[in-house]
Length: 337
Image (tube, rainbow, N blue to C red; front, top):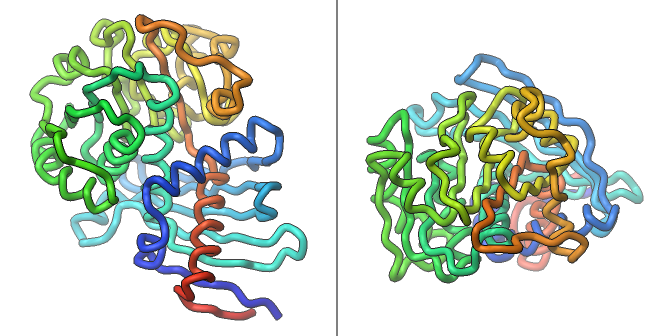
């Protein structure tokens, strides 16, 4: 009755590059700011704390005429088995008929669209003259965050990787980053890559800080962050996770991706619950910067912060773009139900 397309991880990698994903993310944020999307409640399940967890995210994009969902799990032991830590699928449906349009590997899309989120936050809120990027977290997401920031911030020429709990991982990641970033089609010429001996000293150098960890304790103290720094906080996507001192948030110009979700499960969750700042501290959603409804940075001395918990809308939009391109290029497998 219905035909739909199945795309593997290799298919998706061939179809989507960082620039196209950034554009897709921008489109989603704009639609959200214009009231043309719905995001539905997220399902979280922790199978074993710090070992494995699952989330199911879903939503509706009126502009694209689709709805869908992503089921993705994180399994910390998978890399030692030669498997990706993130494993998942994205399903896309036509909103008029309910017909399934496609089933896609969700690992690569999750990685690259999340990287594009952090980089976009920097583009919209960091100082234009920013030169040094610090990424806290040396896992699989690190390369995507670096690639997106280098793609969007032409002046960035110094990348520092920090992993406060496992410094040796940061050393290995700094060596691997030039090849990993280049594989995503992003420039590395003229960019210096290094690992941090001290997170505090790395923060003192950074113009842009992106955090992408599983932390449940603040790793960055307020006193370490210079005036004028931008932070994109990406790792806190589940209740109880937190990466930076709530006082940093309190002292910042704060934007979020999804207000209700960030209050429930983002970087700002615990600061609000602890009374460090209130929900009225949220300056707006990132899409409002893109539409011009809200103003971003107004001085070089401002600390700015973008709290992104991640939205299924981003995955669905990237998946729809990949499906459209796959149809043009006759990639993937067409199946029927």
